[in-house]
Structures are given as structure tokens and as C-alpha cells.
Amino acid sequence: MTESENLRLNIRRAAIEDLDALGKLGGELVFQHVAYDKLRFQPNATIVEDYTEFFKNEIANESSVVLIAELNAEIAGYAFIRFEAASFVELLAAGAWLHDIHLVEAARGKGVSEPFFAAIIEAARNLGSDNLMLSVSPHNRVARKFFERHGFRPTMQEMRLDFE
View 1 (cartoon, rainbow, N blue to C red):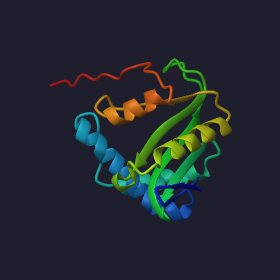
View 2: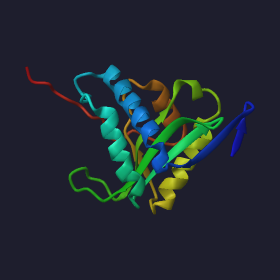
View 3: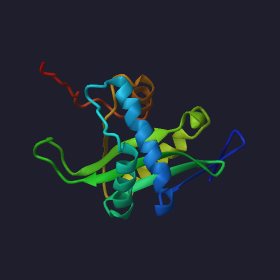
View 4: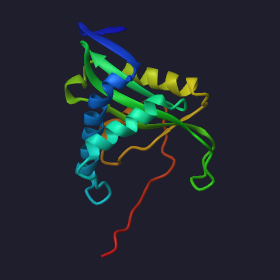
């Protein structure tokens, strides 16, 4: 438990009881990315339900960690970390991936991100990884600066060509 600006912060592993909130937050993250690039990100009408089912499986997956950040006993965000096998196609050694991180707008600027990110790093290490990879939208300058401040460096840039 961390105290910040008289707010109570609790970071914990997600539980089955969190699935509805995780589905909603996952959907919010998807639509944030849709706003960046609607051709690249095209969610279906059941994205919240799909995320809920997805997280049900990931909570039970020993190679995954789904973290919840609670601010004053309210879910304020989540992170999804999974240990991924080496990939010849992606030219990557085995290691942890931070697939999702999302904080609700009301939690931003309240001292949540630093302890939450420390818990993410700890989760990646506990999965047996000596590194952490992630993808970040080039449009998300705030997140890119945050990750760079924490030692991340760009390694690849995804590009897309849409055929007419």
C-alpha cells in the first residue's frame, strides 16, 4: 500500500471478481487506440465481452500476470504482462511483454504510475524474465516519454500499407 496525495493506492493481482471491470478497461484501451488509427484498430461489437473472456483465461495462466491498481478502493487501472516464448518470426528471445497498461483518466497525475510500474517490473521478473518488451503508439507521446524515462528504448516501428 502506498500513500500519495492522501489517496490510498493498492496494487494487486486481478481476481475473477474483477472480470467485468477488466473487460470495460480493456475496451477503453482499445478505443483509445482506435482514436489513434481507426484503420489499424478495428474492434468488433463485442470487444468488452471478448476482453472479459480473455482475461478470465489470462488470470488462470501461470505465464501471465494481470495487475489491478486500486485508488481509494476503486479500480483505477490494470496491466497485463505475459512471458512469451522465443520467436524466430519476431526475432526475439523469450521474455516478458507488457501487452496492456491502462489507467483511468481520474487516476492520472495522482502518483499511481510510478508504484504501478514498479509492480509491473517485479511481475516480469517473477515470471522469470530478464527483460520487458512493450509496444506503444507513436501518437501516445505521454506514454512514450514515460517508458523512455524508465529506460526503454525503441527497437522496431510497426508500419502498415492499406490497399485500395
